[in-house]
Length: 214
Image (cartoon, rainbow, N blue to C red; front, side):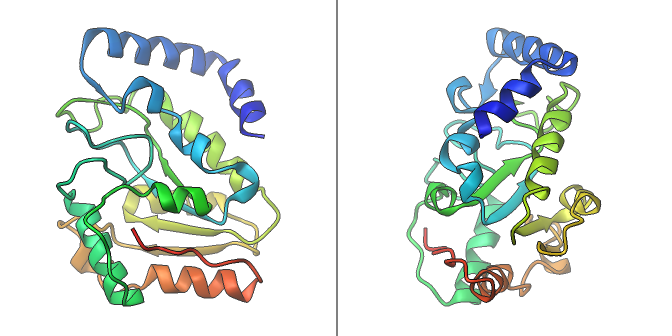
């Protein structure tokens, strides 16, 4: 299903320009994630298996961090937003977590970890904001909202919450709060219990819950 959706996007004029821009960026600067990892989110979470959508903004911009999944990192040093996510996981679900920052296990269970921008120049946040990624990912997001079965949409921060208007099917659950960034987590992310709320909703709809252990 993803192949068909993505192939359709790649035929559009905006995507042809986008592809040229990101190909040039990879040639002329250091860009994350690795080129072969840009579309990891689609490889790891099948369309028909989506249970939860967590929306991020753009990839981490440091070495060995971004690998195509929002909030996930390959580095052993935990990014600050993910550190707050892990603290909330422990508080919410009373589970022990490993030192890993790789959220691939979530993705394989049906947690679609989508950034709205899929590439970034090293040490330059939002550097590819004007490329056209947002049009691509919005179209993907809309495709998911049209799935006619219960899906949980987790929207953290103003950017993610601006996508709420596209979620119109009453079968879906929207969980929204402040962003887990240290600059805003205290404004409503901490203590918001998004993970137990997600699993409660999935179980209520006879869907296997997510094992959020990392």
